Image 1: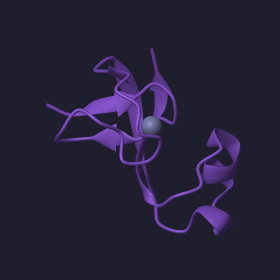
Image 2: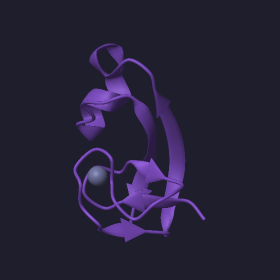
Image 3: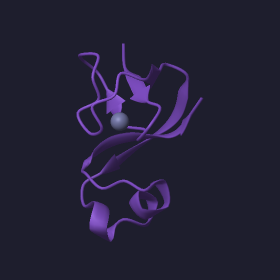
Image 4: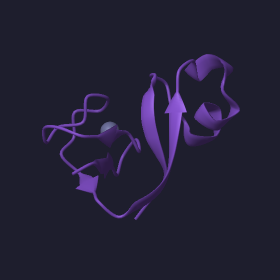
Amino acid sequence: MAKACKTCHRIVDEGNQCPNCKTHNFSKDYSGEVHIINPEQSAIAKKLNIKKPGTYALRVR
Ligand SMILES: [Zn+2]
């Protein structure tokens, strides 16, 4: 089951470590999903402080 990193909001399907920030702090209680392909040209990426491409949750509780 997919879960979202509480630190950087990255959505992770497999494994128990975030590929972005290497933490193990996940929440299954998240909402919204956004695919960031080019963080430097994405307003959403800037707002969420996303530096790497991937799938991210808009809100993580
Ligand atoms: Zn993370």
